[in-house]
Length: 257
Length: 345
Image (tube, rainbow over all chains, first blue to last red; front, side):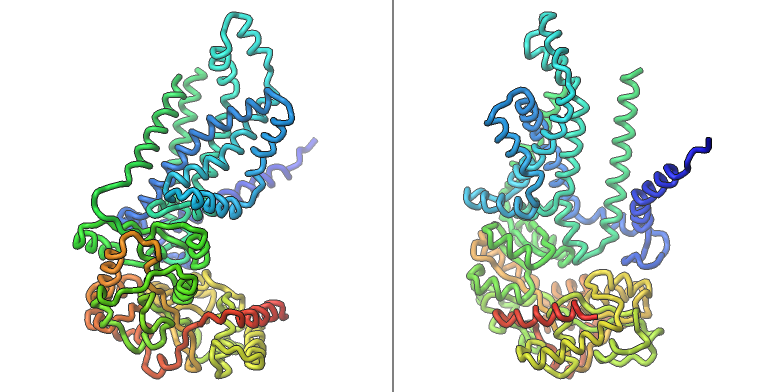
């Protein structure tokens, strides 16, 4: 029997669709032409210019600070929320579920505007802190949903077995429950991190003076400025991401051995 | 346990960075478009005034306005386009400009100041200006004329773009028929509509951003666009030129304003004054390819810049320029005409 070749073609097309734009971006980051309409020759001009752009670096720093801190807090809160949602049932938990679920479906612009009005009503100074709080607000929901899915096919008899063998609740949770949930928590954390790092709409509204993030900066540069610098920066971020992914894979491989 | 430690460390780092923003030097918070000021000039100002300048960026007048209107504060100098500066002033969001603190205002070019919305500079000071016109490929259009009628030319069929901007494009239609681009006469608007629909049949699309790339790669041979943009593309492709239609066109100012809740009003005035220092303004004009309407600065520009007809159009052309005014209630007429244009086949 001859195997159909359609899946192979589909996979190739999908991969092409995924990675071709990235390839174009990488190539264009070395293009001397500013508008990328034609090939102006190979050049490292944009990388050189990028080094002098202190505002871009400042924006990148802001973005990373927020992404790391918002991920850390929302992982803790989101996991606890998922645990509560799974362990307890009742009317209050149904309300809890709705409240956790809502930020997933509320449009960003509405959320950004209402958070801004809220911070203004509290007369809080808009800063990195307000962006951090806003990001935690929407990241919690994603983390909670991912962890909840993991919990749904979790066998609690393992925890009970641990307790039967003499572990107290904390030890059981720490040594058994958390490690088994780790893939879910990790996935939630990655999702939260990505969402935080590229959020534009909400961040725009709650950003204060001095807390421009990279997406805000990039949007403004598309209107007014040089897109090639963005290409160069994206390539650097890509390289860093690939190195990190490669490194983490190395680490897990060694652990398995 | 490792994980807990990590979270703790990240928390501490975050707290340190979040809290670590206060330094003893006075800080000026500027809210501007990206790359709209030469970075070295900002550093020079910081050294001169012993202060720190923090620049945040926005991507459209409307989103900046929405944010401030909702109550966002903390900015000392903002750079809106002049129509937005007027709306902000009407909404009582701006502080009056104190001319006594701005000796350099005498340097402003009266020819352009006459066209501005806030001629008296009561609440805004012009920063840069840009003229809307036609960019084209000289080798592909040997018979080019500086006129809106070029958009009817069969030679450019399917290879030209008009701006996807209601006021600019209807304004071009009005100017082509010899009317003011702020006309509120229904009959004149109907004529402009028919004119734009006629062009629409000849153009590739309505386009606000990609026309720059399209012109650079010679995909388009005629585009409706802003002088600053076309000047930047020109550095890439020597075949590109920019023309101001003889029937007239629009001119846009980006202004500097001080919001009502600014904390550092004195420093904000110093910054505005600094940017209108003739040498500083000249450097800025060279850097961002828009013209700072500062007459005293012209002497410091390079010869090449001074002879550039895009930045320094002849007087009779300047006389035909008009600023897009805020029409308030009458705006609905434009929206209606624009919808008809968009729906037309």
